[in-house]
Image (cartoon, rainbow, N blue to C red; front, side, top):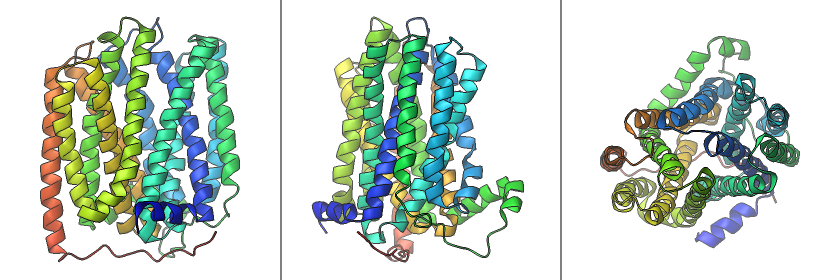
Length: 441
């Protein structure tokens, strides 16, 4: 099946289109919300951004958000996933409106920060439910294309939402009231996402019944056991294990690169906070273009050379591109590095999402994707924290660049070696397909 035929097949499934619409609206809202917070905390003229402060902000916003992962999996494997997609955006709309209200009256203290964390944190339910639900609306043969389209365009629409947030900031102003108005726009968009999800059938997205699962009360009283169950399930599947290791290493290095980007455009390339925000927005747009290209080229690349070889090549390309494009610390070349790393980041994520969906049984999928989401964010924060310990306030650090380049080179070599050994151990066997869901539309 060629690329266009695959896209037509995926988009021809009515419930995929509904799931896809829900994702796009919600992730656009995420972009607006996160742009509002980032613009206020990092690029307001009155805010002084250092490496330590930036890393602390990442940790404060993302670590609590990620630690919800074990709890999320317990419920995603028990609640109707469609209901999660309906009610989570509604709750987020309320929390974002509360954040906006606090900011409008000039309160950006601990209460403001805690509610913002809650608004980010409950997104774990939404993202993990989307990933766990996808195999219920498309069959195995379309999973790579479906992931490529939905995950990548979801990320791109989040970038577009961030761009919209930037424009709204210019319209409303960078102060308390202007940021509050921007956040109210995000709250309205979350309401629209919840409404879009009501078009899906209540039971359409699973989970499938598993009589061997523990009762919910027992699972909640032993959350750590639920997390361990997901880890054990992945550990028995070598392909899934090494895929998670590869993307965790990527996210650690991406955390270093992100902190470097923030500081370079805040304190090195730009002459003012507002100019720095504009430069960072250009890098964000370039990364979004890279994400889009990854969606276009990943499915045919996987078909031609295989999913494991494609991951290996992308990680190797990251090492070469970062060395060539970042080392001069030139603003134009840095924008190009954002495009390249965006392509690599999304290409790897599409492949890892697909490997997990193929390898993991549906009864465990929610827990496994919750573990995946937790690793995705915690490793990113760890990278930012490590960078903060050695990076100067202006972000120009050859030592941290060396860590990025060496890390990607090692990741490519190790993943390629272990994946090849695993493939030989299987005798070239393909991953066993999940039973295809009924088609409609």
